[in-house]
Length: 67
Ligand SMILES: [Zn+2]
Ligand SMILES: [Zn+2]
Image (cartoon, rainbow, N blue to C red; front, side, top):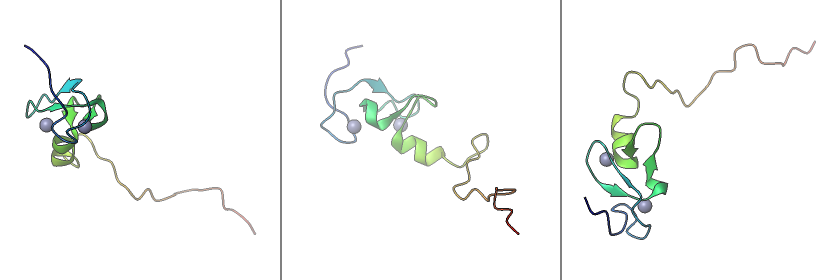
């Protein structure tokens, strides 16, 4: 397996990772280490089961108790 070329996302960064989903060669900037996915797959599968990340984190019990 010869890994050479540029990132297929930005076309400028050197390839350092291969997406485990689409086998796309991407640079470190466009690769998510935790999921082994490129940013495109990451956004495609993002929000699915298992990775529930809600952007708006409702502050429940925040320290604003002022009377
Ligand atoms: Zn890139
Ligand atoms: Zn991918």
